[in-house]
Amino acid sequence: MLYERGPGAEVDLTSAEPLDFYDVHIPIAGHGAVTMNRKGLLSAIGVVGPEQRGSTRRNQGSVNRILIIPKAAVDDALTVRLGEPPYEPLSFEPVLDNTAAPVQGWLELVGQLADFAGSGLAARSPLATGHFEQLLVNGLLDVQPHTLSEAVAGRGTAAVPRAVRRARDFCSEHAHEPIAAADMARAAGVSVRSLREGFRRYLDTTPSAYLRGVRLGLVRRDLLAADDGRAAHNVTDVALRWGFTHLGRFTGHYRAAYGETPSQTLRTVRGSD
Image (cartoon, rainbow, N blue to C red; front, side, top):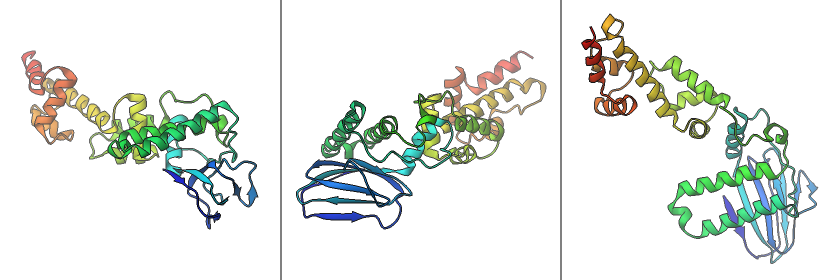
């Protein structure tokens, strides 16, 4: 979330409690100062994070951009990179060096977000807004030193994150139960949002679609085993056994996966007897 505070009276803002978000102050005009945990920063371009107390003093006529990044957004980005939730809270180096080219590029990106937010497109396209926000979060993780810099160095992506592997294993072990994406996320130890992002990025699918694919495979296994009595000989019974209650949609998904309907699979098996 981005705020832009224009000229006004001299103000002094201090957080009463430690923050539960990351607060990035970017002065545009005028003068100001940022304090973190009662220590003044060398630059007014600063980032204060969770478990820290910050204050900002701005003189009359100053203009500031204030970027608020929820802790959950940073944790989600770290989970994708590390393959599991961060093992400790992340704290950024508090001062952004605006003479460094990467930081300058990131600050320009914040300016583009300000233009985007004011264009009207942001309100009409939440998906585009979400992608923009992810770009800012991941960019900040790359350009600004923090307590987990070494752990995420060179890890813009992980091969297949541990959380995704846990969710896949959970699907295989519990496909016969009435589970959903929330159960998969709980088993993997991440939020549903993080799990969806992990599946999209590494498996090019969604948790729900992956679970459906596992169940379709089990349906096909049972239909192919029908000739020796190891599974029910009725397509409806097999579909219901694996959680498919809408038979029309089930048939469409099965045909898309295997190039034939469930009844055709069963007829083929019976025709081979």
